[in-house]
Amino acid sequence: MNKPQFKSYEEFWPYYLSLHSKRGTQLFHTAGLLLGVSLFIVGILTLNWIYIGLALVCGYGFAWTSHFLIEKNNPAAWQFPGWSFLSEFKMAFLVLTRKI
Image 1: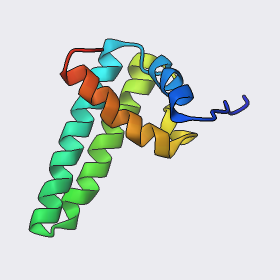
Image 2: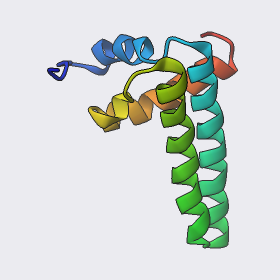
Image 3: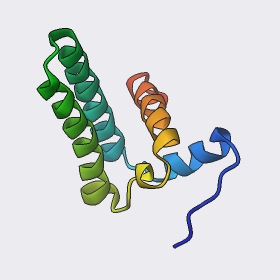
Image 4: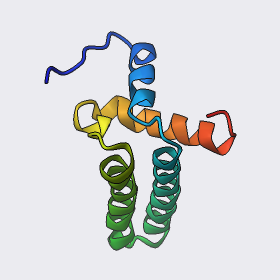
């Protein structure tokens, strides 16, 4: 399959949302992001690198699990890591504020 081409983030965002159309996927992503960010902050504050590693495992683990078990597609991060990282925060904000 050919990799989609986007000229801007505004073009990418609807594509990202299309890969996260199910509520369960959105909730798994948001939970993984919140847990991952929390563990990352603990790791920085305690200078314990295990927490930083756990942050990555939790963040990506929750997200990828939701893609494989709920959404049944591949994560956008595999093709667009930068924009997907930004979109993760945007989607979580919209989920937490009940705008999505």
